[in-house]
Length: 560
Image (cartoon, rainbow, N blue to C red; front, side):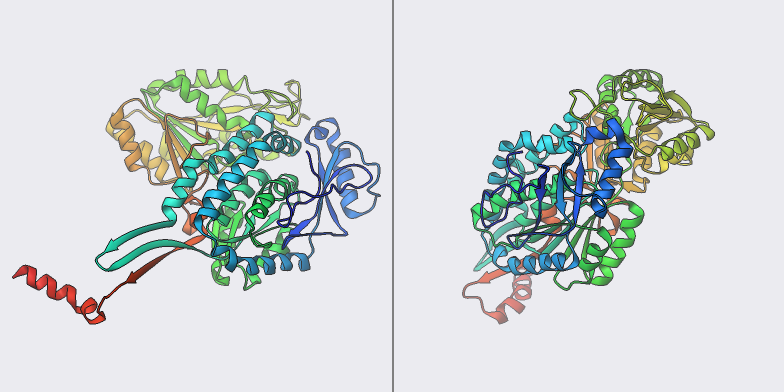
């Protein structure tokens, strides 16, 4: 990385600040100032977990407790991030509130077009460093590049044009100039997840384009990516545009006290919350009670449909994405419903591809499996499926870095189970009913039925899913495709004959219905979710009395 100090919106460059050990340092960013702290969160290089996970994690805990001096640290410790106290967190809210008014008055040409274009350019310039940060946090190199490419689509010209089209529409009606526009909500707080903090922080940054100010809590378990991208990529762009210093604020701290402070503060308008469905639904209730808008990004349990005339080779390629990152991504395929006519062939193709997914160090080319330090839930879920009659197709074991099976291994084999008995009973299997955050994929073979009945069952299965992040389907017949597209209502994104996780312009990367997005869930474009519709009419020479009664008189005259 080229710089190691928190950037602020008052300057585009700054001196590097390093402790004696030479690790990177990030302070809290509050109102354009770098705020120090006596307490730190230390970041471990992901490869060190494969060398000696126990010793490295133990050192991290001792450093954060202050029981060992933070000098002459080993290469396993790559960064430290200031831990914000309550006063710092409250200052961040005050700075954001002060910035909201001036920033909301900046024209959309600057807030959306220029900001988005400049940010994308800086993302391209820093793409190698962004990838390096993601790898350090444990994202395999291939998936780190995938995340960076996704960020570029979020701020690409097509997507920026779509955002602009949604933010303002204008019409002429006689002597009136009418507009339907979206206005910013105000202060938006973002709580990104520990498994994807950098990309989630960038997603939240699109709320700034709506005219909001943003406060981000970098997760304690993985703060480096969020702090890096916010302070070294986003903040300099805001500085170049002359944005108020509190437009962007970033702190790192314990989630419970910071989230409580957000709910209690009269300054906060919206909260973007990433987490489990159970915790998120409870948090939604607290937000509504406190008068805040909840924007939830919760668990996904995505369904892939494979029809009898599907391109099975391509479908198997897409379904294999289920094992990327050892299944620890919210937007991957979690279950497959396959037509009985092609089930055997599809399973053979899927098994071949699953065998190629290999473990290794995040920095290695071609590695897609990541460590799973606690695997008891995987084996419990697998055993539940087998106890309920599922068949083990492949996988099912812990493995070492070299792929050798070992009960003490910290990787898991890509695992496929075949669930028979039809769609109605499939959700009795926990791996079908609930999100699995490990490489375990149930393939459900539908019971034989006439095509019309079968297709209705496929669609009903998707729509009855309690979760609703994204779904995909594979079919050749255009009429089948049209029925799927016209009938699937559950989920924030539906893709047909395409990669399940691939990014595209215009389309959302997050958001969903049901247990994925809560009562207000939908496809998540934060620029839209953190703003509200306002209708405006500017008239010239209109008589109020005529405006009230004239329409009725005109209607009667036309009838006569």
